[in-house]
Length: 552
Figure 1 (spheres, helix red, strand yellow):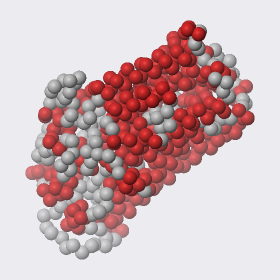
Figure 2 (cartoon, one colour):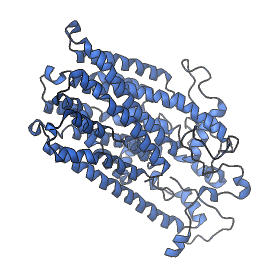
Figure 3 (cartoon, rainbow, N blue to C red):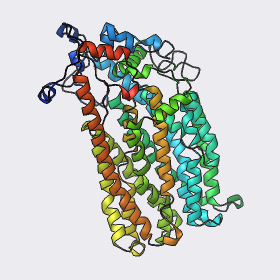
């Protein structure tokens, strides 16, 4: 989050002030409402109205109340310093004097939800179908047919995940529709999976404010759970083709779902617009999806909240220098470390879930059907977690809650001989673990919010997702044939990792709190004119700026 400078009418001396501790305690954080006089404030909206969804009820009928939020663009001296670059794709709709009501903004956001986010969810569901069919194939003797052991299954999973690493940095060099189609084509090889995911996180940030983005990402990631549910039903039907044409059922599964994914990828290639102001084409209509007024609202509500979104255009390639600078941004390293570790307990269980159910004596088709409830429950808990994080404005604590969810089940798996447990008890325990409220969407929004520049945001999204992919690789290496069937070492490792993650979230929150406190002291020690001079002349960029505060 960026602070906006409060300017007083009286000029202050430029010498730095050295406040005492008591002075710092008395000074309130810089607020956007401090910019304007009471006359000017009446022309802008109330900053306290931060509904996450257009359908949420407010305290009254505010549809005609001004929604335009105070911004640096309301100060003539600061406006030029923050003005978007001239080749920004939305520059023709940039208008600092534009004003609109909450009724208009809610209508635009609703339209974005139905046109952009819904299409993004369909695209992710298509991509997830290809990833989930490996689990369904495991229930149909996939490993036996290929003469693979479970250790071989782990190696296969690691190679598949590693195939996605090189393409992560491609995100800003190609449009999201092209990346979606490319991933669908490469899904035949089960490699390069995930490039569209990294691009989509950045893409959705073009349309939503920070407090809106995390919730939308929550719904977007939840689409993968719905895809897993559909994959279960598809697999139940398709695997009955066992022996047709002399082929195994899992081969038909790969073929049919692969063709479906490719078709949906082509559809996304045609329908997904490059930016909010570039929606007109033969498939979306000559006039596009949004009117000129709606485009003005879309562009200015976003750029007023975060001027950094106008520092790059959407087809600008990323230089090696920018990639290296983003990698050196150690303030985001805690989030990369979280991305590396938080998913391992659930990822390990997920990769071996159908194999474990087969071990407990469930038939192929019962195993397929029993894999559905955890995905349905996970969809609900994921949305609840992300919404709770925004409602209570606490990202790290919600991450801790997700790890605490898994602790009782992991403790049980370590306390008993799990391989000898009643099969329905075992299914319940495993299902509850996989139903945990995944904070993956929360992390993606957190990472985007703490980047504070388009260039850093692009690379940070890639680095975070590389970390998440690496966690899948680590997860595939926890269970070994030598540790079967009880997996004593593996289950103990998962328990230790869950406890480690809780500590890691707490340390990450502490780090960001201390960073914000240090910057507050420096910022409050400056006069108004010194702050203006800092904004105009500083070489600090992105989240290095003194007027930026980390979310936690």
